[in-house]
Amino acid sequence: MDGIGHGAVHRFAGAVQAGAFMPKITKRFVDTAAPRAERWIAWDDDLPGFGLVVLPSGVKSYVVRYRTLEGRDRRPTIGRHGVITPDQARDQAREILVTVGRGGDPLGDRREKRRGAAMSELFDRFLEEHAVVHCTPRTVAEYRRVVEKHLRPMVGALKVEGFTNQDARRVHYALRATPGQANRVLGVLSKALSLAMEWGMRPDGLNPCARVKKYAQHSRDRFLSVDELGRLGAALIHAEAVGLPWVVDETKPKAKHLARPENRVSPLDPTIVAVVRLLLLTGARLSEVTELQWSHVDFATGTLALPYQKGRGRRPHVVAGAAMDLVSRRPRVEGSPWVFPRRGDPSRCISREVVESGWSRIRRFADLDGVRLHDLRHTFGTTASRSGANAFQIRDSLRHANITMTARYVNADLDPQRALAEAVGNTITAALTARKADVVSIAAHRRGDDVSG
Image (cartoon, rainbow, N blue to C red; front, top):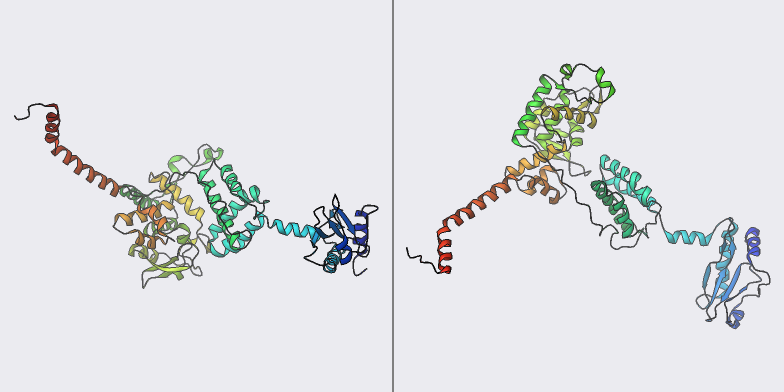
């Protein structure tokens, strides 16, 4: 039957009501089909499933009816009479029925396509086409964590095209107990939705996250004072020469089996000490130092090829002579490309976890509780600001993408602000004191007192 599967015809036969009107749908028949008080339909006697619907308003449309393999009754409209002819409608109906005979569901496919991709599909594309290509491995890992832990479970089933501002607000509000995390998740969601517009997955327009107000966060910016730097320097020397106390949780059962407190001292790996010193001298990020290779070092120009911004390649970066001296004293391990190789496995660089563990001992001995390794970067930026460097110079030294981030480092030091406030306050106070007699004279004059004496 013109290539139409017998299964499709059989399924249509079960869908047609008994006694339905079945003429030959030709142009003459369609032109003479008169509207009635209620909608009526005529099925073609030549192509089962092809029909004409006539509305009380006189509008006439061609339809095709079929059942899917799952037994769902479908009746998609092919087109309106006058826009297409009966023969054109018949050809389209035949194509649809052929597809159905092969197990397809044209109307279901059309509806699914109209509904568009799910947010979960957008997150997959965001990670693979954006994060992996443009971001550092650490950033990619963080994006994956945010997507898998928060975004996919919350909104993965929603459609990209139908995602609204209220959906974004619900995500943000659900994480209100951890404001910083809520803001980070919102940032990742916003970036994914911006890319969805670029990729044509949703119409261009206002990002649904644009009007979601972020939660207030207490700044974690911290830098070391001159006194604290002195204590840190002494702790680093002590760590190499004598050793540092262990960091022990006395509440754990195994703590009682350890050595006596006075004997819980051991030297710190010199590589950890060197990493901490270089962090202070360069203002680099921890991963930039731990992953430094000998091929990145140029002693002739006094530069280190540190990453330019995040994930944008490496460029020679001028560093202090003290930093180059520190690197030059590092022993080279044969066959290892790393300036700071891992103990026991020089084919790999020292891990973040090892450095973080050593830093816990260092800061405890130096009485710097709460100071993070990243705060050494803040210390570099703040010291540069104190030295008279402008924001653009500090931006280049810290390899920031823009001046906005650098402003956090420049504004972190309150000493210049305090000095300015004191200077202004002293000037105004002095001026007020010098005018005190004049003020008394004005007041007395207003009361009519004799001020001639």
